[in-house]
Length: 238
Image 1 (cartoon, rainbow, N blue to C red):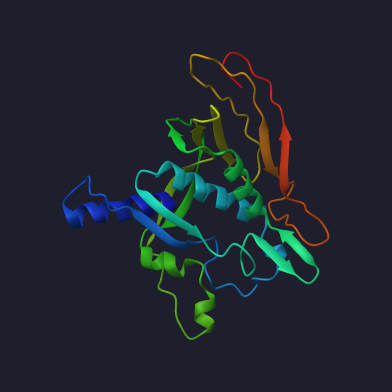
Image 2 (image 1 turned 135 degrees about the vertical axis):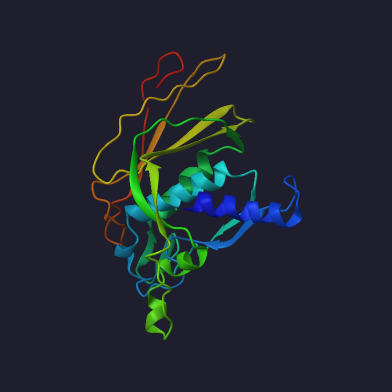
């Protein structure tokens, strides 16, 4: 959905200005998975592996659209519904924190053309942006508001199980590939082919994973974190 939202916003800019090369870009002043209507903001069990997957998917989308997106602020980052919770008992690093840490430490500044071949699944998405504003804000009803009917504004979309974006850190000559498995039930065997003249000298695999999509972190235990391993490689293929 975020990809469609960004492209439609950019199309509106081009339509109003009459210039497909107009320098105005899209800016997201605030974004997160739940907006501000969330009565469980302090409940760490609410911020699960699913939240991390959605956060990574949005980041992948923003990177892929870096030619039209100039600004995208994740809000908030600490406490409330942020990636970090602090209180008198200590600090909790929620799953989305580890996503931001992984991208900050490894994704480069130059987008690389890449192609994903993956099976797809069907899902229903809102096409009316006003409906989407209310899509997750049912708490607004409790405050006297009302939801617009979304039944007529949902459309069927085919979404790939595998989401990916690739970048290069030119200074360190490092290629980083972000891969997201959106399947709730199955692992996905993935073959990565990298085409270049020098080959792959070394590689690392960093994984954010947990056995259950509803796993979360708390003061007592960190169930969702980053694991690191070194995958096998052969002639530009991993």
